[in-house]
Image (cartoon, rainbow, N blue to C red; front, side, top):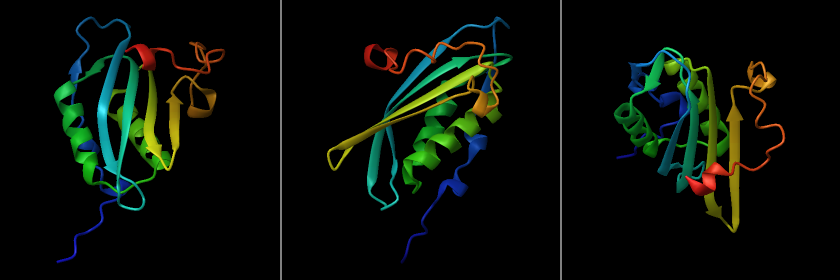
Length: 146
């Protein structure tokens, strides 16, 4: 029996649930997902560490739902580049944050590792560049120390 290949189009964003922001004020939430797995385009397991920096408005991330969403991605066949964009879009849609920064650090494959970043503050992503902390900091220091 042949199994159906699941692609990024099969990712169920409705898994992501929110909770009300208990303070209603802005603050920073940092989340590390150290065992992020999915199937690369050759349908071989790929691994990454994911770092979310999240500035909530009215909603915060329900961590149990995030864990279920991440688990759901294990059987998805997708490229790094498509994955970070879909992940980012789903986070933005589900939580409507003031700001979110997604950094994915992929394990080496063939001796080469990759790091991809998206920040909602960037103009190219529709942001206002009001935070600007990323402009002179090419390396995400917190990914090493978190």
